[in-house]
Image (cartoon, rainbow, N blue to C red):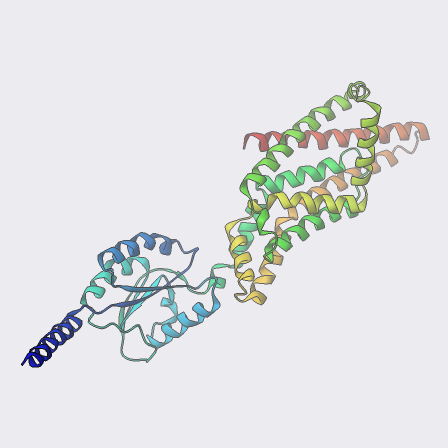
Length: 376
């Protein structure tokens, strides 16, 4: 009798447990495809946080498609399985059951209602069954589609005039100041800058991406440029030599040795290479996106030419300044040569005068741009 009662109690408990399991709400499964750079996707973070609070059992799975090639391929399979036309294959997009919602507006408007009406716990399947959904506006699902030629060019041109790059241009002008302008050496400086940024673009030197370092660099260069510009003005009017003579002889000697090395071909290259390490934080969001794509091995062969092209455009300001002042120097040489009726001594005097004049112009540029960097 006692055994029967125990057996009946166990049957009752088992029935209650089975009923509870059957009555428990099933977990809905949602696939959400997005990108870190997608503006509409960023606005959905708060929405999904709220949705998870309202539906704790929701199985929300996120797939980033701009930096993960496998996720991108998976998204293409879902687009194909759910029969979404190519022109509507954008992000953000949500798949739930046999439904899809494309665009942030469609997701916010309909996903929660679809979750509440869902009676199945299975995740979206690639079975090609009949599907239905809402199409809204979004951004390209293929990251390379966002990196158009015009966008990359525009970003590179803007980067060209960033304070960090202007500071590098001032350093080039300072190296050219007071010397005969040599295009080859100037191009070595540009090559140093290009090499440094190329290494960064390929995913190296990430620890140097520091906005504070970039800020400190161009502010310091701005102050030095203003001082150099003012010193150049005084030198042009013949009063700076007296100040130079007040500097201790040992310091003058070491300074001259350092300046002598900086004006060699290796000095130009190393100066451009090392100083540009301080300016990585000046790159645009487009370049940083291309860098991330390459570093994540997401179609690197396709994005590498874009990185190379971007850097070519970015350093054009340095090349233009070099060629401009080289052309000015050649004009001055022609002006001196045109005084053929003058004596050698007078032509030498004219050449010295024109050289000092060009140096004065260079230093005035240093002064003007240095002030910009200080107050920008």
